[in-house]
Length: 300
Image 1: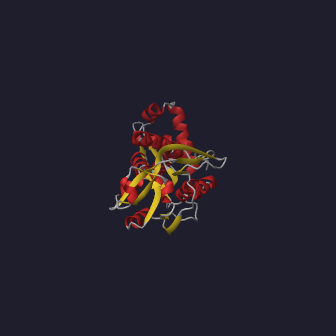
Image 2 (image 1 turned 135 degrees about the vertical axis):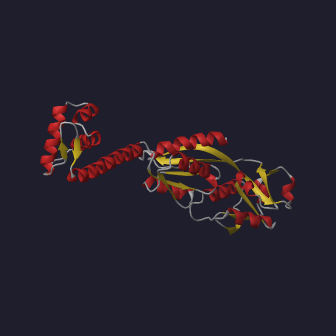
Image 3 (image 1 turned 30 degrees about the horizontal axis):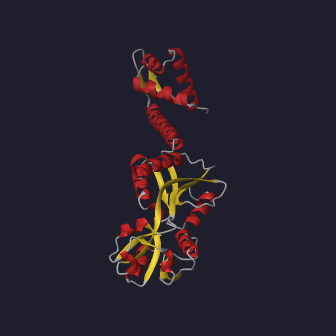
């Protein structure tokens, strides 16, 4: 039938105006050309759509049906265009987010609230928390659009990263521990202590840092208990039997009987940030990165 969208638009306006002259003015076209287009449309659909008189134009029974369907088609087209434009601006679609528990203490909840409020049509796929090493692999493979994580020195060539916050690693010990009396702890004084920590297997960045700090101090830490749950590590420490090296923000969990002390030397600052693949074309990614930068500035 070769019916064009312009045919539908012209017919709908004529039906609404009930006048070729008023419709021609509204469409900014010549009246004879408009009349010819409607006649050709009737020929294409093989049905009379309009009853014409010298004073007015009225829809026929077939015209009523065609008017309803034509308006629905035009509405759906308009909605499709708006949805496409929204997606191209990153305001809709899907954003896949990964994170580590410790590296996203404040940023992740704030980002989710902001994205949900300002971009309600954008669907957020938030993956379960995992290790920094796994997040780097997931972003590099394209499974994730971005990840909030500890920043590793060794990253793939296809990845970009940006530091947003940082935290100092400190010693956590029971408030009754003799070393809790001072403001600082020399790591060499922990050589004969029993440690708790994140698992040695599974790419746990914080575990590797704790092990390396102790090795630099001249010993391998005797890790008696391992857990992926930070609360559980603190409960072990509260017994007075164990110590650990964890990020300073862990103190906000406020487990009774547990204190933290600064490492005398060398101090270690863990860098938190966001990673993404440089070839990622998701239009919502730049919006999310911009929000993260703004939120990080307010936190620092």
